[in-house]
Length: 124
Image 1 (cartoon, helix red, strand yellow):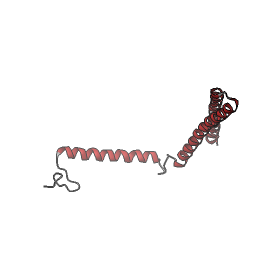
Image 2 (cartoon, one colour):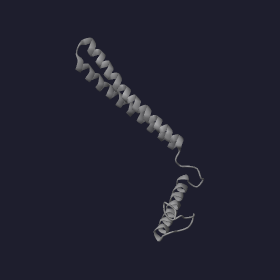
Image 3 (cartoon, helix red, strand yellow):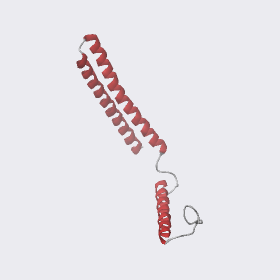
Image 4 (cartoon, rainbow, N blue to C red):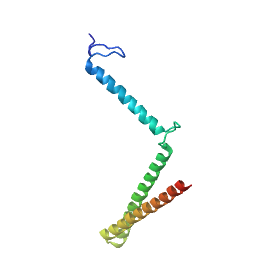
């Protein structure tokens, strides 16, 4: 006897439970294949455009970095102004909030631009 149990060759069924498991695995494989075929569409091309997905991730990363940069620059400017004027928390708070607002405006502007481009693509 094999140390890990009875030795099986490919395609053989040992117990009834293993037979049911093999049937379930085969059915699952068929379902996966049919889902993949459905996603690829009739021409066999993928409907999931990886280039568009990469572009979307790039845009999201750019927006996130602009948002964080706005907050950091605002905070730094507020801190520097506070150091010059001796009003430590006031400038830091005000300019950090202004940086936050600038980040939100940049994200809204980019969202409107993306929406216009999507509408243009749908029409044309």
